[in-house]
Image 1 (cartoon, rainbow, N blue to C red):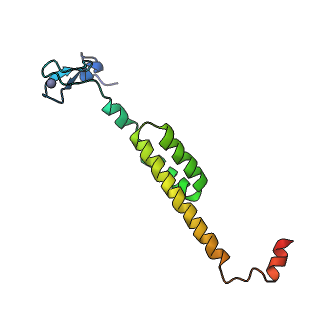
Image 2: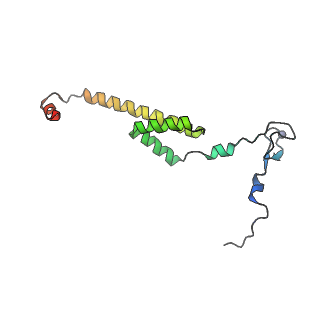
Image 3: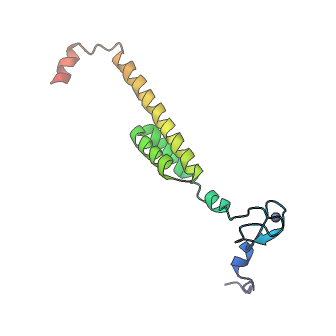
Length: 131
Ligand SMILES: [Zn+2]
């Protein structure tokens, strides 16, 4: 491998400090309040919630599935919306449900269109179908 020596500081040192949102002073990552200005600095895992975003490919797949298999989209969307804490997943779930509903509406319109189509279903063809 490369001849570069390992850095003396362990990787944890990079996240050991953070900046106070109130006064901009660097503070330890585990303090609950800033020692400089007293601002509530409890560690809110912005980075963690941001990292659990759904991949774009997964989203596209879900949206496509919602459109072509509306029932699946409704179930997946409801699951994502109800059981996932992450905003991104909730948003995807909501969109899945919307797409499913649109697809179902389209299906309904299509079936109505077919039912009202000029094709004479009560003709001789109906006999063949009934058999
Ligand atoms: Zn501060």
